[in-house]
Length: 139
Picture (cartoon, helix red, strand yellow):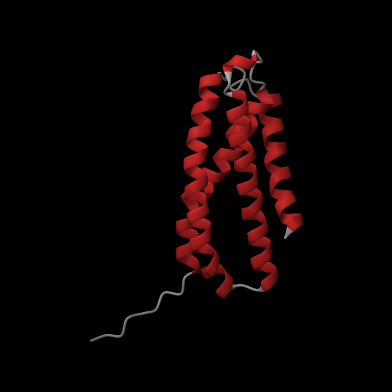
């Protein structure tokens, strides 16, 4: 499970690095934008926690132990990345420190919080497919 967690965090870091090096859309990230991303991230972290806690028992009943632990590891990695993204956004959202927001900081925030948001959006559909839908008996 730990290896899957590390893999998820590493994957988000690589994606953030590639985005920061190849695109220019994060060059103008402001301190205010980072504060706004931190606020959005906190809301998504709460939604992420509820969604994963609701989906975990359904998957646990339908999958093998290895598959279940692998899924939990990836979900934990996405959650940790999101939490780090919120921390980076909060730290770089402070205008008083005189530092500018680097492209990697902004990319990390966007990728990690975006991954949590994507997971929150997709998890209900995945949970539906994991649930055993019982056919109703005809009257």
